[in-house]
Image (cartoon, rainbow, N blue to C red; front, side, top):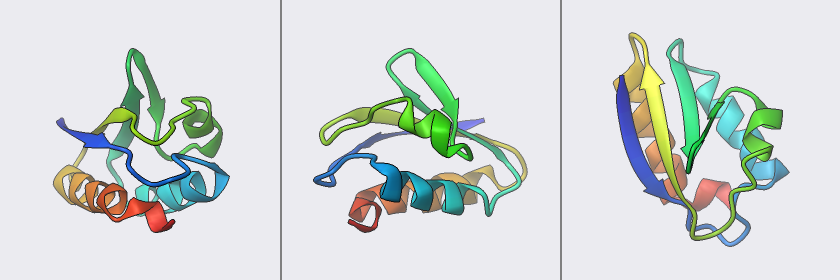
Amino acid sequence: MIEKNVLVDNPTGLNAKTAALLVQVAGKFSSNIWIKKEDKRVNAKSIIALMSLAISKGTDITIEAEGEDEQLAINELTELFQFGLGD
């Protein structure tokens, strides 16, 4: 399992539009992928689960991936957050 800490820096945080993009990207990978905020960990392939985290601008999260393409998943999802989730 690989994990990477990321700061959510886009203006709207994780809203429905950005959560949908995150789910779309996570869904490309066969690995299990989770997003963790504080002590809550959810499936990154579930928009409902992601929205339940209520991630706002300035929130520190952890992306976790486990599986055969875990490194690719971590790299692509980290890049997605670095570029503001398309906002």
